[in-house]
Length: 339
Image (cartoon, rainbow, N blue to C red; front, side, top):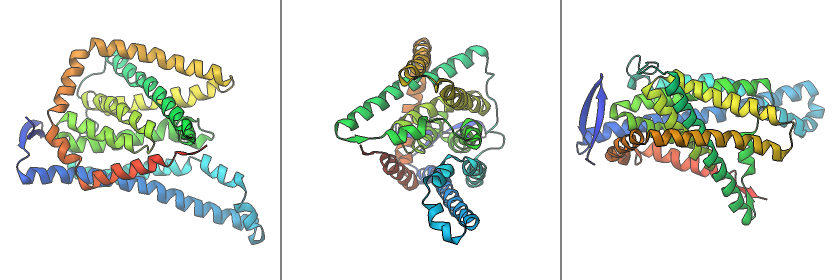
C-alpha cells in the first residue's frame, strides 16, 4: 500500500508504482514546478513593493524639491501611507495569477479548474461553510497561547497578528483583502496548484496545495490556520467547484474580517473580544456537530489521504518544496521580537 499512489489521467484512475524511477521523477518534477511557481509568486510581490517604494520616493522628492528630500523621506506619515495602500497588492493579484498560470498551464487538463463536479445545495453549503468558519476559534486560542508563552520569555508576535487581523484602512486595501486577494489565492492554490497535482489523487492534491497555501502566509499561527482552511477550501473546490471556495474565502475576508472589524471598532476592547469570540464559538459548536455527524465520511477521507504515503514522501523531499518550507518558516519567525 505504501509503494503506490494513484494517478488520474483523462478521467481514468491508474495505479502508479513509485518503485519506477520515471514515476518518482515525474511526481517530484510536478511538485518542484508548482513550488517554484509559488516561490516566484512571492518574489513578485517583493519586486512590486520595492519598485513602488522607489517610484513613490522619487515622485515625493521631485514634488517637494531636492532641498526637502531628506525631510520628506524621514516623515513617518509618508511610509505609513505607502504601507496602507492596496494598489500594489491589486497589481500583484493580477500578475501573480498570470505568472502561476503560465508555469502550470501545461499540467492542467482543459476545463478542470472551473469544472463543477457536484451541485452545491443549501445543506451542503451550510455544512462546508460551518466547518470552514469553525476552525477559526481553536487557532485563535492557539495564537493567544503562543503569544502568552512568548511573553513569558520577553518576546511578542503581536506585529504579525496585527498584520493578519487588522482591518483595511484604505479603499484599495479593502478591495484587495475582501475580493482580489481571495480570488487570486483560490485561482492559484485551489485552481492551478491543486489541479496540476490531481492526477496523483484528489486527497494528495488537496493536502499539498493546502500546505503551500498555509506556508505562504509566513506566520506561525496564520500558516497553521491556512493549512487547515486550505484543506476545507480544497475539499470544496475539488468536490463541488472553485466558485464555491472563492465565495467562502470572500465571505470570510470581507464580512467576518473587514466588515466585522469595522462594525465593532467603536466598542471597548473587552466588548470587541466578546462579540468576535462569541461568533467564532457559535461556528465552532456547529462545526463540531457537523463533523460528528459526518465522522464516517471524515474517517474515509483521512484514510484515503494516508494511503498515499509514498506520494507525500517524494513530495516533501522535492528540492523546491523543501526550499519553500524552510524559507517560509524562517520568514514566519521574523514577526517574533523583543517586547
